[in-house]
Each structure stands twice: as C-alpha cells, then as structure tokens.
Image (tube, rainbow, N blue to C red; front, side, top):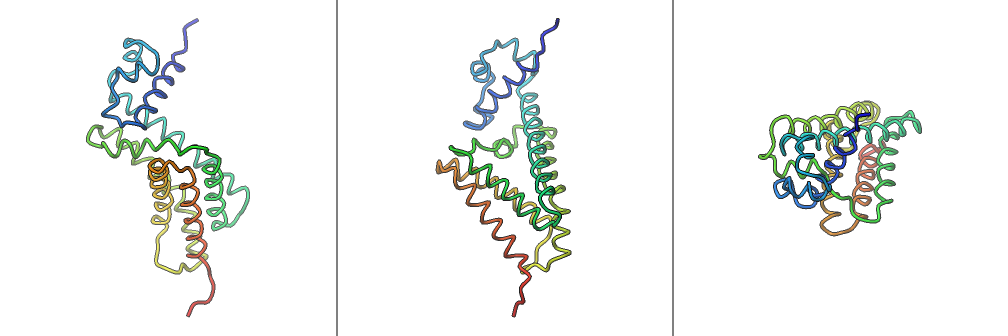
Amino acid sequence: MPRDGRATRENIMDAAQELVLVQGFSATSVDAVIARAGITKGTFFYHFKTKGDLALALVGRYAHLDRTHLDGALARAEELSRDPLQQILILVGLFKEEMAALTEPFPGCLYASFCYEAGLFDESTLGEISGAFAYWRDRLRPKFEAILKAHTPRHPVTANELSDMLLGIFEGAFILSKTWNDPAIAVQQLGHYRNYIELLFDDVSRP
C-alpha cells in the first residue's frame, strides 16, 4: 500500500508557518524548515520544488482555514438571530469568546507576515491574500447593506468600510497583542468595535 504523503506535507507546512510567524519569510531558510520538521532535504523538495511553492501552499492553506472559520461563525450567528444587526453583534461576540480563551497572544497572521515582504512573492501568492481579504468583504457586506437599509447610521459609512474595519481590527490587534505580550488586547479591540457598531446604528432621536 502506498504511503500517504499528506501528513509529511502538513508537517513541513506547520514547521514553516511557525518559523515565518516568528522571524519572517526571508529569514526562514529551507534548511531551517527541514530541521524543524525533522525531514531530509530530498523529502522537502519532493513536496515543494521551490521555497516559492511552499509560500503559495502556506497562504493557500491559511486562507482556506480562514474562510472556513468565518463561514462557521457567520452560520452560528445566523442560527441565533434573523436580524442582520444582531447577527453582526453576535459574530463579534463569538470572535471575542475565541480570543478570550487564549492564554497567550495569538501567534500572528500569515497574511501580515507575507504583506510585509510582498516583494518576495509572485502574483499567485499575493493574489491568495487579496482574495482572502475580498472574501471577508463579500461575506460581511450583505449584512451591513441590510443594516444600512433598515437603520440610519449616525455618521456616513459604507458596507465595505464596516466590513474592512473588522478585518483591520483583527490584524492590528494581533500585532499589538504579540508586541505587548498581552492576549487580552484582541478581546478589548473587538469589544470596542462591537460598541462602535451599536452606537453607529442607535436609532434614537438626534438634535
């Protein structure tokens, strides 16, 4: 029976991602990945012809997991409420719960690591990142469009801007959390975003 190489491939990618999140892609050599994964050089190049192929596989896997995570959280929010505004508030609450369960800062974001060194990657790899960000916008925009249709915001804003803001808060919170070694920062920032959404769409009479 032929051996399934998927476990080895995943092991290589896990080792590479851990190194990239700590020291960046340019500083992560193939030899370092090989050593961390506990494999031979031949095994590495059997699965990845070049370091660039590894980068594309890493970001592709990361984007797939990211989309699956967002879809799952949205599905849960939709089960708990039929109202788009409440769904968004629940979604942020679910993300807060996940971040609150961390005992150490989130290890980082592969998107950010790659964007910082964008000149090292080809269009396919960068396209994966762009597509991942667009997916967040495309999934959240209909919710905010429905909210804007039903509620008058206190300040001018678009559905795309509100969608991008949530992703931006995640990315920024990861950086701050890691820099200050404080896992609570992501929770705090998500809480502020939730407060902002509530205040923005508070339909009380205004002078």
